[in-house]
Image (tube, rainbow, N blue to C red; front, side):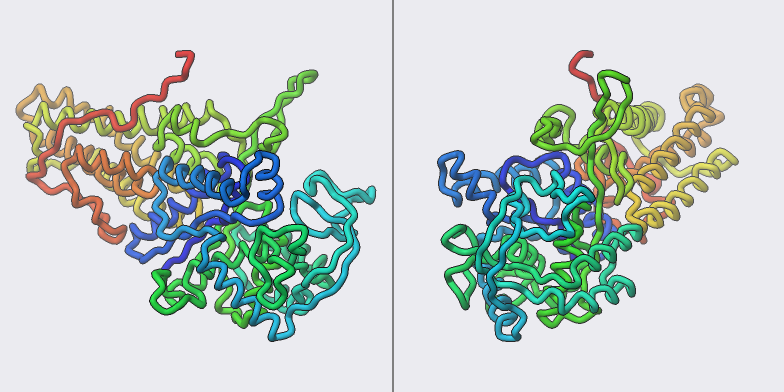
Length: 529
């Protein structure tokens, strides 16, 4: 079983393009593993607790539970808008999750892994955590990433994180805790060094924050939002579930093939807190999850004085957030999914560029694959009565197409195994380019005029349609709706049921009839065009 999870979103506002990218990235991987014949469970959801939710609710004059429910609907709508195929949905206010968190807290308390003490220090309101001198910059200040910081003294419960950091370092170095891409590993090891003598505050006084899961052994405190939220990866996977629960079988899912997260929450939450929590619960090295850490979508900024361009992170305060729902309304689901998979190297940052979205989709999908599909079907209908009949003709041009076909079937899975979605799509685009070049060189519109060349015409059109059939299958993880339309026009519903191992030359047999083409990848038009 392939278990894939995204970081659960914090519904203290509306989704942005980063949320959309993470969902699309995970969905492409989930659909690809299904295409490879593997059983997949894809979990995503929302983390609804925490002080910021309370502050926003007070500001808006609504009950915090009402705010959580209202904002959660926005994230559910995003899943629908992006055609996300998740199997599970997590909400941390779910009673099943609360019960699991309570059982884990009780067990850790009984093991002596939790203790109570009073602490005085500086508290980041944005990150909802106490800070240490290690978070100060070279000038002794807390950076802007921590938001408003205030001095605070209070009694809380702590998790003995420091007891597990020696084990954690060994787990990271040995790849028991897998981190992809590999260059992130050094960041984690550096962060472990900073955490070696620090324990984790895992509670908040109920008199200050009541919106959370109460500690079962001390109801005057609620669970720290990060400790609560991380447990969703196992609570909604069926860990400690009640008999008769509809949650999945935990032993079949765990360990997670990938927790897919943004680089901003790799440390300390996912690469330090979470594995140490699991280790304290009794999880062994072989039961550690893997972390797939993606980069950010930034936006370009031009210096008004020099005209030089640079990248800056999207943020509400800067007013440069890209709304994925508006983007889908403007260009459609297929274009958004294609761009988000095509124009970023997994693990690295990229600049969100609407111009690139238009150029890539129009050149590669509309002009490239869309053009190939339309003329393949139109000419087959006009020249062969819409039937792909048997042929004997073969020549160097046809062989080149089949060689390109074979090369794609080798390169595509190699790129997907490397989580190189961009590389996989580039390989597919290269194949489509080869077939369009084949069409230009063989000129089936000219062959049609010579009855003596009918067998060659039949071979050429069959090669073109066969290329479209393969493209429709390989595009299923990326643009599932468009792929289904292609298969409908090829009159080949069997393509949707194929697994990657079934892909070879001959997906469309002799006698196959095709349907009338309609634009699957219409060109995107800018508002000023």
